[in-house]
Image (tube, rainbow, N blue to C red; front, side, top):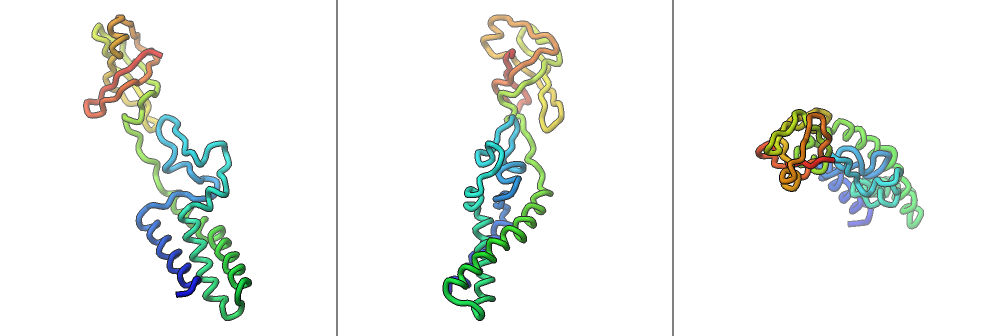
Length: 194
């Protein structure tokens, strides 16, 4: 098996595997490392996208980029081998592979992932987020609170953390609270005053 046939097979199988398996993530372009998989509830940011512009060298390590360049190199090498040879064939094939990734695969991949939805935020993801007391808390340190999940206000039972309950801290309606612990199974959480 020659290098161009191997590159063609590796690139084709890799891209198909990523598309079918859902393993592809935006590997390059302005949305690399953000959006669908990286931005979680509470402002967590994917490390590869910090400081604004994505690093082009990081994009080269993306499996999608490597597979699509291999597919382009393999195809170009097989088509051009009758016209070129040696280092010139490899250089031309590599150039075609890079252009194939940049102008064919990348736009198609980005278009496909434009339709993907963001993962749903869960109550567990609201740990250390801000909540608001909907009702004044009772003598047991419990009251109804509201927390924002996926742009919607969700109400649940809030209980003051042990130290605040022992000090008989008063929590009037409208107080800002911090979620300290979450019990999603019982739709409750432990909170503290901010």
